[in-house]
Length: 260
Image (cartoon, rainbow, N blue to C red; front, side, top):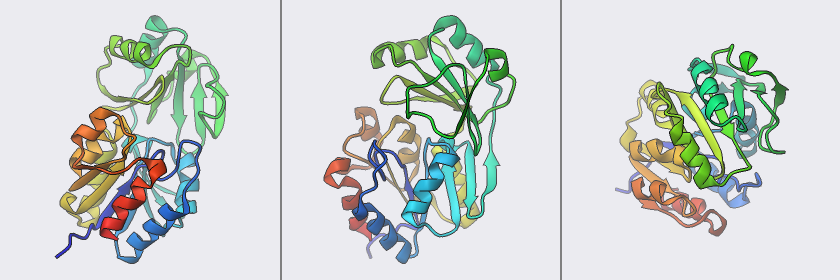
């Protein structure tokens, strides 16, 4: 008998939409075939909920959960109901960044609304309401996620800076650009999906997960079948059970067509 995934966990950027935010019609059709087969489809993304919601709606997903903010936020939609918000105290992170890399822009997520930031981010990189505040105000509130961004340095230099921070008590992942996502300790897409599976009575062996970023590594390792999009960095492809084609070549659709 052909394996039938009971849950399909999908990263968004580089997996469901391209890096300009465009969703191919073929992906929307493939996701609807999965829904028709009775598979639960769950978006699992580093995006905040307010920027995940449009993709949820564009896919035409039925009411159900979505994993946002790299696992720190789980939302039931529609209507909006926050099932889980895991926060941490950002004070230590902010103090270290201000001391070691003072040019770095720091953003703290305001769930469902936008961000508080220490300085403006490059145009188009954050959405929702953006409030520029001083470091004391930025550190004054528990947060689900902190973002670090320095567009003035190379990816390698930024990665070296991130390691110099010596972050403890948090989880973090480095993006394609000079971008660092910081989450509560032990929180990632896999932990959020595991919680949903426990509630729904789904074994992780029956989860098909697709992603292309370093923040997808835990999810791809955890799922019964974890598939990396062909554009993914080497360390992501290495942990995956399989690697499909590049996004622009229809890699996401090709993998879904194997099962749906």
